[in-house]
Image (tube, rainbow, N blue to C red; front, side):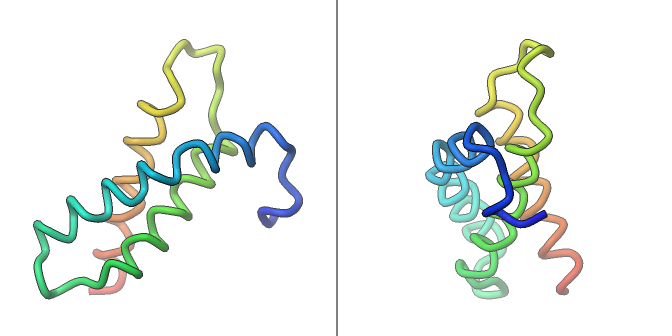
Length: 84
């Protein structure tokens, strides 16, 4: 499934937290220093955010931003680890 196949509520969740991706990517970049590129970290984070938007279940009572925070940071770190 690609982004254009997603229902409007998934796309709305994704769009609503793009700022979170930048915040987390910049935090990780400060930790890694010159060994990472912001563009790559943003890409990893956006993939994580889209996955979070698709998997999110409001019935669990967790706000989307909190859920996305966990998923995005994990995706960024996994991306760095896989490309090291």
